Structure formats: structure tokens, C-alpha cells
Length: 90
Image (cartoon, rainbow, N blue to C red; front, side, top):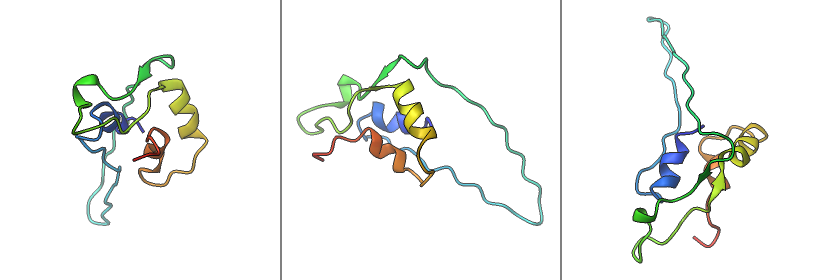
């Protein structure tokens, strides 16, 4: 969920990854779930040092609570939740 924040914060310079797991019938797999998230009222958006004339702003500013509500009410379709923050003119 929150790995998309890296892509937004860096204005697309660093791409978020889609979580995938490969299973095997020959070996057990161990998953450890960890969560880290800012407070709901924290505003997020591209950091100024990543927005330039050559790299115009690609993502809007939003708060974490707004994104969390969108995430839990949307279908999980890969990185589609990233569209939530994209500026449509790009």
C-alpha cells in the first residue's frame, strides 16, 4: 500500500513496486507483515527537489487519511491506486 509513496515523493523518479509472491510446493514460505504509515493528517506530495522544469509535478498533494480511505474502498488491481495521486494532465 505505502510503497507508492516513494514514487509520489520522488515525482516518479523512483518507481513503486507491485507486491508479488512466488509460491512453491517444494519449500515453505515465511512472510512477516510490517506496517509503517504516517498519521492520517500528514500531507504528502512530490518533494520540491524532485520538481523541476525538466520534471514538472506529476502528483497532487493529499493527506494520508484521504489515501487510506481510497485504498480500502478500491479494488486491489496492481498499482492502480497510484492513479489516485496522478495529475490528469500528464
